[in-house]
Each structure stands twice: as structure tokens, then as C-alpha cells.
Image 1 (cartoon, helix red, strand yellow):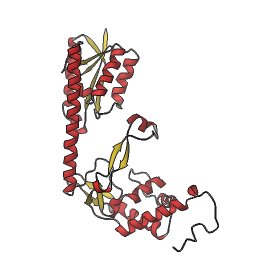
Image 2 (cartoon, one colour):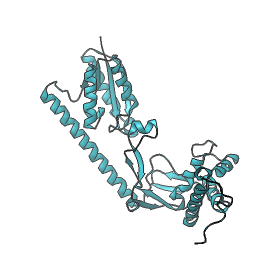
Image 3 (cartoon, rainbow, N blue to C red):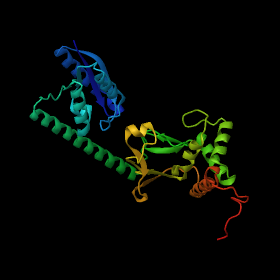
Image 4 (cartoon, rainbow, N blue to C red):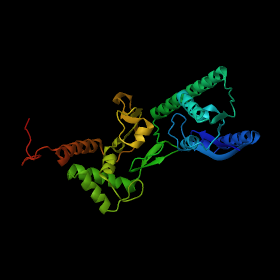
Amino acid sequence: MKTAAIYARVSTSDQVRGTSLDGQIESCRAYAKANDLTVTKEVREDASGASLARAGLDSIRDLAAKGELDTVIVFDPDRLSRALGHLMLLSEEFERQRVALIFVNSPREDTPEGRMLFGMKGLFAEFERTKIMERTRRGKERRAREGKVLLSHAVPYGYTYIVGEGRLEINEAQAVWVRSMYEWIVNEHCTLGEAARRLYTASVPTQTGNGHWRRSSVQRVLSNQVNAGTWHYNKRRGVQPKKATNAANAQKKWSKEDRPRNEWIGVPVPAIVSVEMYDTAMQQLQRNRELSVRNVKHEYLLRGFVVCGY
């Protein structure tokens, strides 16, 4: 009895709700039945084909490495990966483990010509992915220039995102605390830790609904320029990290950095605080960092109280 695993993938949550995954699975099941293969695992995955860091794919690779699979069935090469290098890597990996890699929609021969055709299909899949990404980028940029706010997950604290209209509205229940944070920092010269303690004492829920505020949470709220009336598109980009700061970055092989300011696209939104209040708060936070015990090498009696008049 030969065992097989079926792998099906789509790129977006919308496709998951459609028939794409079901269609892939049914075609792969039909192939397994016609070839007397016993399916021991089926994986349905909603993930980008540009990355190998996929939990479902990893589970199949682990089974193959343990010798528990004879065949891996995929509907089409671009469902396994849209990157030619990744396709070749997976193909060679399964070949070393004596696991047959079958593409139902694109059967390939184990000949020089067959391998060449397989490589060409992988190359075209990678090209198609690049074109899709470019069309998506241009579409988002056009909408941003038309004044639309484009959010996929994290809504700024103090706002409600109106999805169909692409705009932000002030969430007054949260905004009142956003204003309080700025006032504590600007008028009372509070630290981030003190602001977090005040929010916790007042039982103010965070964006996720719990009441445990951290300094980093307060910092993230205060430093968001959207509070001063401008949301920015194209502000950050993915880059190769100089060094892996954690296991997640080591696996994903990417990080984020700010783009040059002239590449940002500003979209006006309702302001919770004035630009002057925002700028003053940023200056106070910088001053707090400079005076922090963590950044002081020597203790001086009048540190922070006496400054140069020039």
C-alpha cells in the first residue's frame, strides 16, 4: 500500500470561502483513487506562495523526512510555490527522500525535456506572481492618492475603520484616553511607564480588549501620526534583516524599515490631537529617553535641571 499526502493552497481568505480549495482537493483525490494511492493527510492552506514558511507544507515535509509518505499530490506547480527556486528545492528534497511529487494539472516526465518544462512552468508562475503584486501595488497606490485609507488588520487605537468606504472615524470611547495620554506626557511630563500604570488603574481596555497596558503599547499609540490627522501609505517596506532578532524573523528572512519621506502618500483623517500637541509629545518622549536611567552612565546632582543657555 502506497501512502500519499494532498496539498492545496490559495493566497487569500476570500478564495478559501470559494471553490478553489475544494476543486484542488477533489482533483487530487481522483488522481489518488485512479492510481491506488491511500491518502493519509490532506492539507488546505491559506498562505502566500512566495514563502516556504507555511505550517501545512512543513507538516508534509516532516512526514516525508520520516519516511511516512510515498507520494505528494498537488494540483498545479504554482499551488506548491510561485518561486522557481523554492519549487526546485522542494522537488530535489522529495526526490532525495524517494517521495514522488505529482502535479495533477501538469504531469511531468522524468527526462531532461520534462525537467526543463517543469522549470519553465515554475518560471512563468513566478513571473505571474510578480505581475499580480505589481498590479496590486498600483491599485492600492491609486486608491491612497484618491484619499482612501487601506488597512488590512491593525486599526489605530482611537479609531474605527469603515471598510467599504476606506476611511477612519474617531472612536470617542478610545479617543478620550488617547488625548489623556498626550496630556500626561506633554503637561505632566509623565513617563511611558507612568502612563501605562494610569491606564491600568482606570481599567482602560487595550485594542485587544484586555486591561494590561505596556510601555510599548503606550509608545505605539502616541507615536502614530494618524492621531494628528494624517494616515500614511507606502511608509514602510520589507527588507532583509541585518541579523535575526528572534526565531520568527530568522524563519521569515525579512524585516521592516521606513521608506524615504518623499515616497510616503499622506491621506487626511479626523484628528484626535493637534499637530502641535503631537510634535511636543514626541519631543518630550525623546527627552524622557535621554534622561532615562538606562541611558545614563554617570549620576550628576543637577542632571536634567541645569542646561546650557545656548
